[in-house]
Length: 151
Image (cartoon, rainbow, N blue to C red):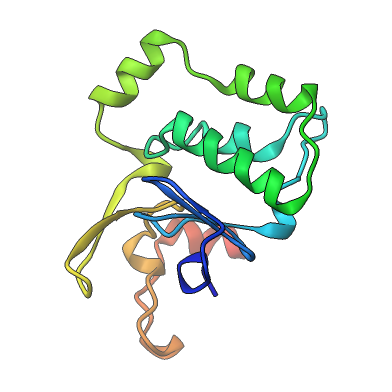
């Protein structure tokens, strides 16, 4: 169940916070409540670092929602949280590049024809031979290089 199906604890233009987690309104990107406090091996908070890589995330909006999540879930911010946001903040040139460049790679826009929408995705597009075709016996043939690598 996503945050939009629950009563919001907090909401800003981009994010909804619920008892279950934090959800981006436009993309549906969801961070479960139990994951909000995750840390990396170096002690920095995972989510500020990870979300800074997403070109569709507005840093100020995410920081506000993330801070509200900490309060709502009883997590204590510390110096490592500030360091996480500071070290993940793009410099001026990077901000301009992100604003002017179309998404590419892992943050590319994929058209969802069933909904008639374009939506950011966090995974790369699958090659044609890897797309599901309903049944394994109807799968597209794999490229020779992959077949050779499996032997």
